Image 1 (cartoon, rainbow, N blue to C red):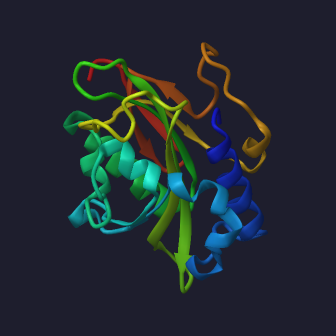
Image 2 (image 1 turned 30 degrees about the vertical axis):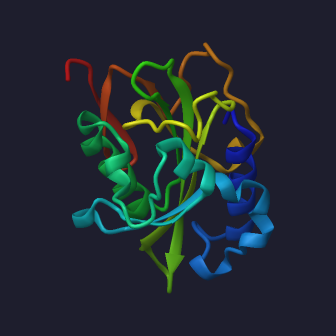
Amino acid sequence: MKLAASRELFAYWNALRGQRSAPERDDVDPSAIRGVLADTLILEFDPARGFPLRVVGTRTNALFLRELRGEPFLDLWREADRPEISAIVTALADEAQPFLIGAAAAPIGFPQVDVEVLLLPLRRRGDTHARALGCCAPRGVPRWLGLVGVGSMTLLTLRALGPTDREEDTVAGEPPREGEFARPQRSARRGHLYLLHPGR
């Protein structure tokens, strides 16, 4: 994890779950993560509706220059990446597995900015097919933030997170580690395995 917002949210979620695979939605106290609320989001596990966003932080809204609450999470991504993002969210719910996604985004005519998207499963009455907590944070503060919005994000890397990842930094230029895949390779998750499809 490169960004402080991702590390802080993951550390809070990890402590909150304890020995469980995921904490309950009602366990989350917004005041405990007020330092990262601007980058925080909560999405609903509803594949038919593209995983609607229920809570969206102000900086994430500023990145797209619109109110995202109620919009499908899938719509934040370019169309070619949406099937893979859908598979990631489904795996998150099926296996209570947190994921870190590396992305890039930019308004037309502006240089791209790296975006880190963290997705963490939440339970509702014991069921992980309910909500996911996450954050969507750009690296740095691009000069266009809040003035012009990005159209969509491009999926670059994917990493399944384990309990010790809260202390790790991903170094720019470092080769992908276990569980992380650099594009243009495509991957599909099958149980605990990823199947790579280089030509897709």
